[in-house]
Image (cartoon, rainbow, N blue to C red; front, side):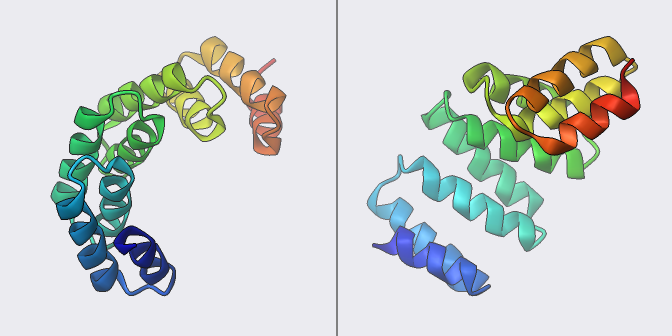
Length: 144
């Protein structure tokens, strides 16, 4: 109940209320990984990077196969210019969910930035085959 109410408050941009509801939800069920991830998203929006990372880390510790938590933490690392940790998280998200298009695209972008063009092109093709239209543009622009 509190988790769903938190989601509704998030949609209404009542971030303080959403965090309160996610926190109550976590007191009732401390292993509810979706609540940690949802709270981390709000903390990121509010600029609480440390708090967001804590929530993502807890979520991953509870459920090490939760691809979304790795992906979201990877995007936060990207925002913080921590490319190596972002790279590792996107790689893990793809390992856990080979069809995770967003993770595949970020991973390809990081490969390209590292000068690993051939590998990046493989991931662009993979995302394209999964239906990502932007992947085709990226592939045509960056790959032979």
